[in-house]
Image (cartoon, rainbow, N blue to C red; front, side, top):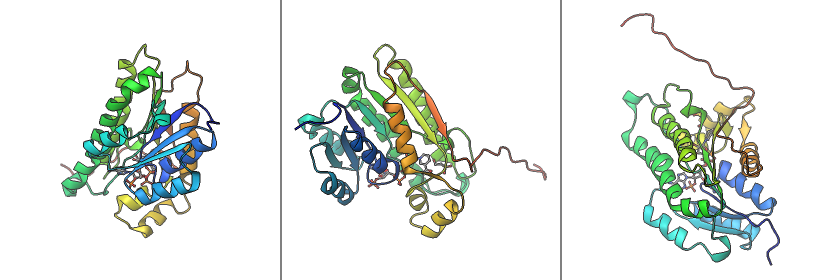
Amino acid sequence: MDHGIDKTLLVTGATSGFGAATVERFLADGWRVIATGRRGERLQALLDRHGGERLHVAAFDIRDGDAMQAALDAIPEPFRGVDVLVNNAGLALGTALAQQADLDQWRQMIDTNVTALATLTFKLLPALIARKGAIINISSVAGVYPYPGGNVYGGTKAFVSQFSLGLRSDLHGTGVRVTAIEPGMAQTEFTLVRTRGNQAASDTLYAGANPMTADDIAGVIHYVATLPPHLNINRLEIMPVTQSVAGFQVQRTGP
Ligand code: NDP
Ligand code: 8X3
C-alpha cells in the first residue's frame, strides 16, 4: 500500500556520507528513494533495514555506462519517473601537487565526478522534464576556491557548478530546477578515500574542527528539494563556522 509522498528521489553515492544520510532523510519524509553505489552489501543493509516498498537499490560503478543503463532499465514501476536527481557520488584522490600527482587518480576523478555525473543527468533529463523535477548536484568549495593539491578535484567541482548553471539555462521554461550545493569541510568517508584508507589522517583533519556532518548536508538537500516550485537556488555554498577562506600565497625569492 502506498502511504507516502508521491515523489521519487534518485541519489547516487548512497552507501556512505551525504548520500546515505540523504536516503534516511527522504525515506523518513515518506519519499520513494532509489539508492545507488558500488558497495552492494551496504545497499542490501539499507534494504534489510527499510524494506523495498519505498526503497529501491542498484549496485553499479557509475563510471560504467552499460551498467548504469542496465540499472536504469531495471528500475521497477513504482519507482519510475524520477522527480529529484541528487548527483552526489564523487571523490577526491590524493593531495599531491599537480607536478607530483598520479594521472590514474586524475582520470578516476574526472570519470566519476564529471563524465558519470553528466551521463546520468543526460539519461534522466526526459523523465525530469516530464515531471518538472529537480537536479541537485553536489559540488564543493574546492570548485570555487583553489588550494594546493586541489588541482583536478577542484576542477571537477568547478565543472559541476558551471554545468549546473548551464543546465539552468538549457532547461529554461521546462519547470525543472537545478541547484549546485557547494559544501566545505564535512566529516564522512571522503578523507579516508582521498588518503587511500589513512584513518589517522582523516581523524587529524577533523579533530577539534567541529566539521559539518552528513546529516547537515542531507538536511540542506531536503530543503532545496522541497522549496516551493517557483523558487530555484542556483548555488548554495555552505561551510562549518570553524572554516573560512584564506587567500593568496606569495613567493619572495624570485623567479
Ligand atoms: P563518501 O566517501 O562518504 O561518499 C562517496 C560516495 O560516492 C560513496 O557512496 C561511494 O560509493 C560513491 N562513489 C564513489 N565512486 C563511485 C563510483 N565509481 N560508482 C558509484 N559510486 C561511487 O564522501 P561524501 O559523502 O563526503 O561525498 C559525497 C559527495 O560530496 C562527493 O561528490 C564529494 O566530492 C562531495 N563533497 C564532500 C565534501 C566533504 O568534505 N565530505 C565537501 C564537498 C563536497 P561506493 O564506494 O560504494 O561506490
Ligand atoms: C571537499 C572539500 O575542501 O576538502 O570537497 O576540498 S575540500
